[in-house]
Length: 268
Image 1 (tube, one colour):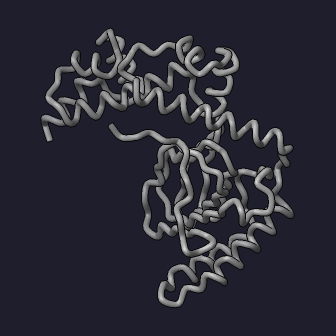
Image 2 (tube, one colour):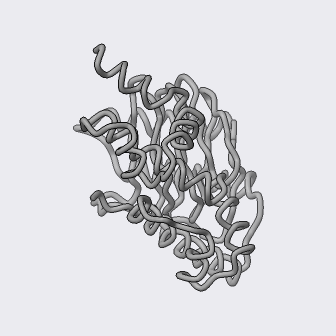
């Protein structure tokens, strides 16, 4: 079974700043995760739909979306070309700073375009120049786009909640076929049910039951596409005890019934 890990550790790199340039139109879909580093997406062309915590944003060409430290986020939809700037903790001035989510600024865009030109010239790309442009972008963010500053104790508490959520999500993905109940989760992780429900919805955008059903339906879809198991067997293997309830939830989440998915696969 694939290991589930919401936490993403920044990869080792000889460069101080990591740059990823997606220079062809592509679906900007990425799984839900979080990290301690600051991440900046500049949309060159097209649009993207991303969720940060419990808010969904549509970001258009010429705009930036800022993913702050320790924020759960995912790529939901969109077709775009974009630049991704990864800023490690030790480079940012203050990790307790929360920036505005969506930014449109001609000065920052000018620097982003300069980064793209440097990056595309692989043989002569100047890491010092790129780092300098990123430093200027950060300076502009700190000057004009700070949403709020977290106190140190609040930042630490927020980080602890992320670590707890990470463990809960891992447990769900590793035990989705079992009879998982909210009360059992609360007891296992020694947390108050009401408090947990509030945190879970804030961070994932879904209730505990909605998230569990989504995980189960995703697993069921994999079984439908890759095995010859019957729909009733797949429902059971995915954690559903009622095949009719399974079919309803599957259509609600995927837009098609399990039978329609299986039929389309046979007709290909």
